[in-house]
Amino acid sequence: MIQVYNTLTREKEVFNSITPGKINMYVCGPTVYNYIHIGNARSAIAFDVIRRYFEYRDYEVNYVSNFTDVDDKIINRARKEGVDELTIANKYANAFFEDTLPLNIKPATVRSRATEVIPEIIAFVADLIEKGYAYESEGDVYFRAKKFKGYGILAHQDLSEMEANAAGRLDDEELTRKEDPIDFAVWKASHASDEISWQSPWGAGRPGWHIECSVMAQKYLADTIDIHGGGIDLAFPHHTNEIAQSEAHTGEKFVNYWLHNGFVNVNDEKMSKSLGNFTTVHDMLVQYDDPMAIRYLLATTQYRRPINYSSDTLSQAHLALERIRTGYRNLSFRLSKASAGHDETVDSLVDKQVNVFEVAMDDDFNTPNALAAVFELVTIANTYSENELVKNDTVKYLLDSIEKLMSVFGIEDLTTNQGLTEEQSSLLEARVAARASHDFKTSDKLREELNELGVFVEDTPQGQRWHK
Ligand SMILES: [Zn+2]
Image 1 (cartoon, protein in one colour):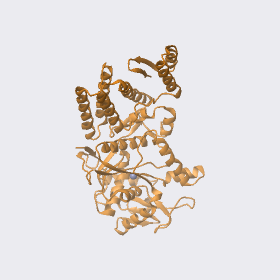
Image 2 (tube, rainbow, N blue to C red):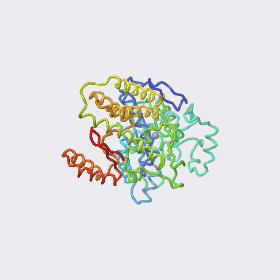
Image 3 (cartoon, rainbow, N blue to C red):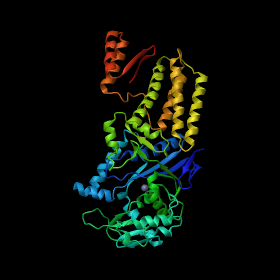
Image 4 (cartoon, protein in one colour):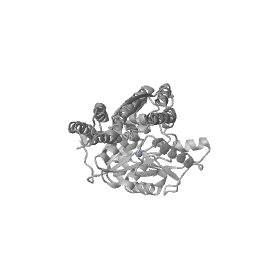
């Protein structure tokens, strides 16, 4: 039984999918006008872990996400660089794939771009007008927020508060075209001939931001979906407006469970361009040679809690991950000389920790508690590695269990020499070969060279082990 915290009800609820064994899940993706920042990566990784856990629990997950590829920020950037909007969007959409690959974020089942669903958006907006939920004004189309019963419930926003905020935005040039300050745009008229636009019943224009997610969720998933995810900063206005549009359009409940991930602070401060601590994944990957440690930091904090990103928290993540890798490697060295059969007592210790892991993840994806179970398994592996005699099936069972649980966090392939340079790896390999041919003079020399490079080698009856 999996329980999830639903932002809509402010409660942990038992998760039941609409179709048994299948999950329709939508997660908001980035606006592709720049490299993704660490906050984007956190959201993508948080929902990747949630998806992976449902898959671990044998659900088939239909995971849809978007790229906002038409928007003011993109238009401004294109102008500044003297290129067209799609050049900017394509560049940063490609960069998204390049940056998320080393972080091992699974590709969405469908990754759609706003510009790919323009006819559907126009039909959706036309229907909202027909139903009286939206109106055209000087080529813009606005949604009548107050007409939608329960507007603002998701983010627990009070109507009078929203009105005060909206009316206070004097720089909002749309204000004169709106019936009510809290109405929001579902279609925006194009005001310049050099900006991207599409023909519509309301003249040349482009979609508002919120509408694409409502359209894609319906097009690629269903009228009512199981899970909608995104950063907590999206609850208002973005998700609030998605609910209003979608439910006005279909007359059905849009989303059963709203899940929101927490913020990322950088050096204990909110990340912002003005503070100069704006951190892109692109830069992080250049500066840091162990992308899985970045993933570890972002994946193992409970998804609703804030994360502090700093060189300290990152190196702690790296050290913790190295402990898991070292335990895993040391035990896998024993595999070649293990005897047949299994050790029942050790097997049942493993079962117990796998169960602890599942209980933790079932509880609104409590990754820190789940991770504690993995560390227990590593301790069991370390202790077992010290035994003079080990049994093949138990070694395999331990290794498989660590691997399987870590893959829920998206950390796979624990045997690779991650974090090692090519030079360090080849010296280690050369040393294994030297020892195999009893050339101890060379192997000692290689050990010294490795020491100087910060890799410490130790020889055991089971073979060479190393740590950094
Ligand atoms: Zn969205």
